[in-house]
Length: 195
Image (cartoon, rainbow, N blue to C red; front, side, top):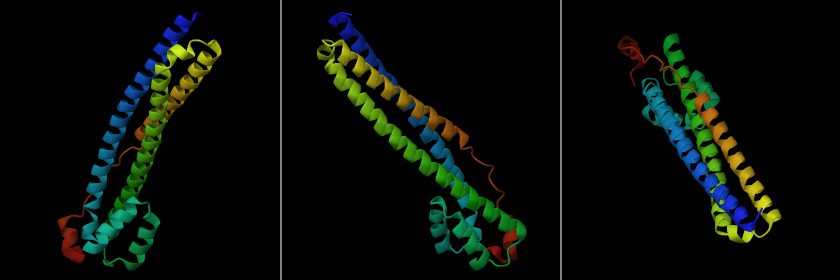
């Protein structure tokens, strides 16, 4: 290939990779943010149940701890030191179910954000590399060996980015929401379960 053909190939490849990764990351970010909003809404729905069975100061503390994945600590505490010792079996199951869902969705949220941050760094590095190499395409085109190496490295990074996008997308879609647990009925609260 002539240097002009190499330069055209390099320009086309680097600009295509940069545009593809930018578009792909944009779609990925929208998907993850949409899923995170859905998870947050479910957490809020399930958190509404906790004040019926916990003291006000304990409710926020346990909500934060459940989001951090401390489900077993909550279950131990709720079984031994709960302020509502005389709650019904159904109410106990409601609290345990809500706490489990809050903990699970909190974990999903943290993992999704971490994966998105790693993907953003990898994408930024790949796009930045493509833009730098794009500006140097006339220099790179002078040597076919350098051109092949530059094309190989940027293509490999782009494939890694795209595989990361697929993994994040599949993990985000696999983290299904759950059905909202039935809230305590007014009759249950009249038995002394009112906060």
